[in-house]
Length: 296
Image (cartoon, rainbow, N blue to C red):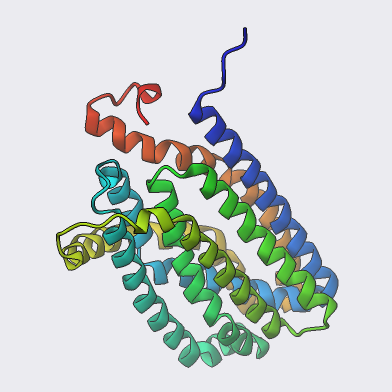
């Protein structure tokens, strides 16, 4: 009689499937951008999108790493989960709003550097997506840290589907590139709300200790990990931004599409990190570091 698959195997399979769906939809979305707005439009979009990705990384300020680590450490005692998530969300909201204000002010300067006037309008239209894109990093990190890995997988696939749908709706309606960026904001907002819904049970757990006690440790931990996050994103986006300074929007669009394919394969290992990260916290705390199968 065949044995039932382990929970870890199911989690890995779910996240592999989710990653495959998200990757396919990301590729499809880029093909649609290229189809509806041609090379020039895609060039404008990709340059603005690269800054959007970097901005969400700064907007989250590494707090997603603190959320993942602290929830992985404390979730099984079921006392502090809600406090950790609430503090992380508030810190991220404040920072992302600040980043949005900075982008609004400096968008014309960035557009001048990239020699693409439409970039300024597109960047400003991306501000809602930056805020909700930063916040969804926290909700996904919380699902990961709380070992809700199948919900994590579903949310990842849903987010990609929402963005894909946004591109289709914008393209069919004849929207401009800045309007497409606004559609991205709606997709990110919808995904964030779903993430909060998935975390509803975690929010119900209360502690007598003050929530504010988590502000300092989460802030410090997040800031320590922020440089790594920025460098990691720059590693995949800086080439597009530098090319934008010297080349036309059309050339940037063609190059960025090719780079997307290579980046998708390179990110495959993230699936294993997502599944093993919360489990590793429990294992190390129990002193069973080499025995992942015994930890849950």
